[in-house]
Length: 185
Image 1 (spheres, rainbow, N blue to C red):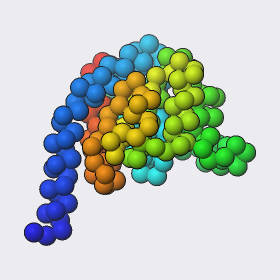
Image 2 (spheres, rainbow, N blue to C red):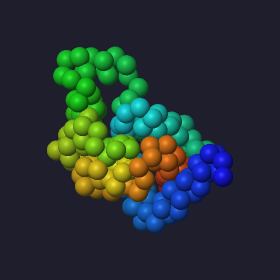
Image 3 (cartoon, one colour):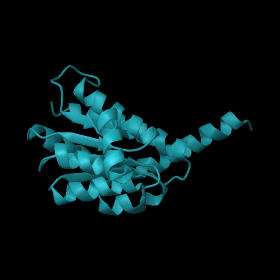
């Protein structure tokens, strides 16, 4: 068996495990659609590849996914280099998302947090801040969920330890969420 075959088999197993989590995906869709219908916004945070997932998710909502509809308010907290660097410099990297949640979030908004480990401290701090502000938390995670899974109102936790497989399933989850959210608009 080639390395490519092994990777594809590993991916298929991760997808099969994800199929057991679809209730949490449906719960996330309901929360996200209600948030947007009520005139609130979605904030997103994560590090590295998860930061790219935040940008991808926000872009699909603000632009469009598959159908023509009005733009939906979603903001990736990973893209403003001036905010990221000034907050990191003045308060520390662990506060980089929490400070933005504090400044931009309002009750009724939702924070969607990505962490393949489930234990990214800056994500945990953002979720804590969101909870204090009556902002619901949705987590997309891996490695058994980590700390953020237990902090979330809805957790989509991928039972996988390989970061690439977790991120692949997160990409599938993003597309499912976007497609189902669009049905509301």
